[in-house]
Length: 272
Image (cartoon, rainbow, N blue to C red; front, side):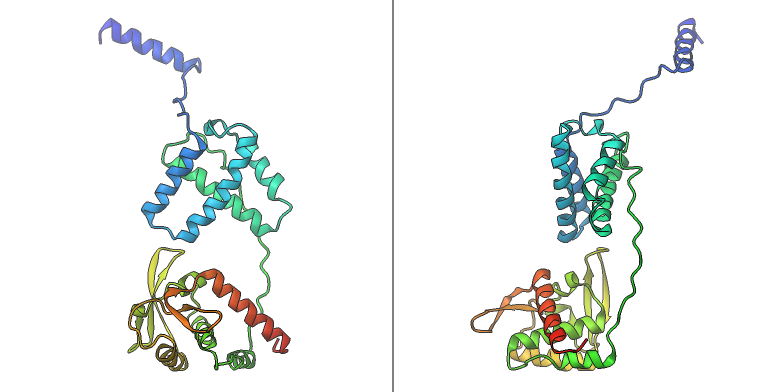
C-alpha cells in the first residue's frame, strides 16, 4: 500500500473510533409526495378502491395534524413521540376499532416509506393497535332464517332482488364488496357456482349456491333482468316505478341500506 492509502485508512478508522461518522442524509420528503408514492404503489399492486379510500380518509386526517405542527414539508423530522401523541390524543377516547384503524393505516404508510427507502427513521415503530375483546356472536336459528326468507313481498321486483341478495349471502358468505361486483358472466349455472373477485386479498375464488337459490335466481333473471346474459347481477331500481336499471349495479352502501331496512322490519315483526 502507498503511504497516501495508509494515511487515508488511518483517518477513516480514527473518525470511526471517535464516533464522528455521519448518518446518510435524509431527503427533504414532503408529506404530499410521500402519500403520492404510497398510493402509486397501491395502484401497481391492484388494491381495491375501498382499500384506497380507507387509507385516503386516515391520511387526510393525519395531514391536518402535520399542518398544525408545521411538518407537512419535512416529514423526515416527525418523531415517534409526536406520532404517538396524535394517535392517543385524537382517538384513544373513541371505540377501539376506530383507534386501531388509524393506527394500522399510519403503520402501513410509514412501514412502506421505510421499506422503499423514502425514510430512514420510521416514527411508527412503536404504534400498535389495541387488543380487541372478542364478543360472542349470536347466530340465526333455522326458524329465524325461514321467517326472514318468507318476509319479502314478492309483488315487487325489487323485493325479488333483495331476496336473492339474502340467499346468496347465506349460501356463500361472501363480502358486501364482492357481492356488488358479481356479473352474470361470473355465474356457472351448470355447476351452480360464482367466480368471485376477493377485494381484500386481490385474488379469485369460486363459491357455490343451493338449489333453492338457483330457483330464485332463474325467476329473477327472467322477470327482472329480462333474460340478460351479461352485466351486473344486482341492479338498481327506479324508486317511483319499481323497474330495474339494467346497466346500473348496486353499490355497497345501498346493500347496507336495504339490509338495515330488512333488519328493522324483522325486529318489528318479532322475529328476533
